[in-house]
Amino acid sequence: MEKQIRDLYTVKKFGEFQMEIIRIMYCGIKSMERGGYSTQYIIYEDVVYNEGGRKKMLFTVMYNEVDVICSRMRFEFKGILCRHALNVLLCNDHVILPDKYVFRRWRKDARGHMRVKIKFKGCIVSTEQHRYDTMCKSFTTLTDIASENEESYVKVILWIESLVRNMTVIQATHLVPCSAVSKDSITKRSK
Image 1: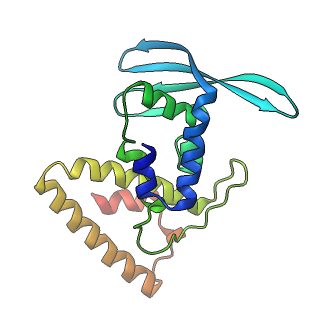
Image 2: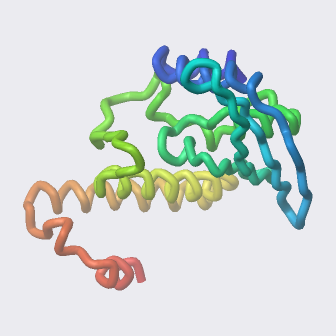
């Protein structure tokens, strides 16, 4: 996993990922409970604070073959899986990080620049960043489904190209400000 991310990510983001890998040594599995399609892990972490103070913190990680979700929510806020989620992946023999946890925006080969200003002030997420993240997640789900066969792939590509043309015209002519577009009008147009 470390080699995979080193080869893909920028130096700065790889450094963040590497710190999470290193900190796995302070974590362990306290308990594991299987239920239905997922397994719940309680991960403890030895945390050192001030001068010599230590405490064990507990985190809940839900795991199935498709997802790993930690109560720390680091991936959702920073785009890097935390040590608790990585620990569970490694315990389940994942030696390569699943593609859904490798963001294109952190890659060395990413083209262009980020257009969304990202602010990390606690848990505050700007409206623009929230919209961007929501669209990225939706498009990732769409590409996962559409890439399975040629017909779906072609339909999605044609739809995206058409949408890009329409959005470019709208932005160029300023006929419809984004704030004037309601969810109802989006639903009506898509039908």
